[in-house]
Image (tube, rainbow, N blue to C red; front, side, top):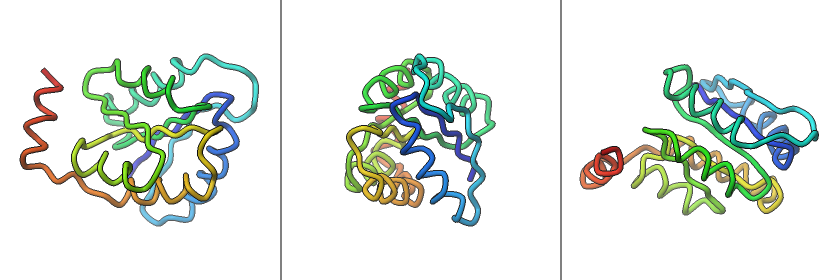
Length: 143
C-alpha cells in the first residue's frame, strides 16, 4: 500500500514518530510530502499535496497531521473524491474505514499522544471498507 503523508508545523513531531513506526511495516511505501521542521506553514497547501497524490493515483491512502486535525480535515474534504476522517481513537479509525471508506486519516499532533496515534494508524491501515449499504452512501456524497 502506498501512503502519502504531510503535516504542518503543529504535526511535525507526531509525523516523525509515525514515520519511524510505519517504516517497520512490510508492504508499506510512504511518500512524505512535508514538512520536516517546525517553521510555520499554511496547512491547506499540505492537505492539497496529499489530496492531489490520491486523486492522481500516486497513493492509495493519505495521512494528514496538524495541531488539532481540524484545519487539515476541512481543507482535505473540499477535494472531490476525498473522504478525510479526523480520528481520536481506534474505534473512530475503524469505523471511518468500515463505514465511510475514509481515504485520508487526519490526526491532531497537539491533542493525540504518540502511542494513541500509532494505534489509530495501525487500525486504520488494517481495516477494510465493508461496502454494501455503506457504498450507496459514499455514492450519495460523491454526487
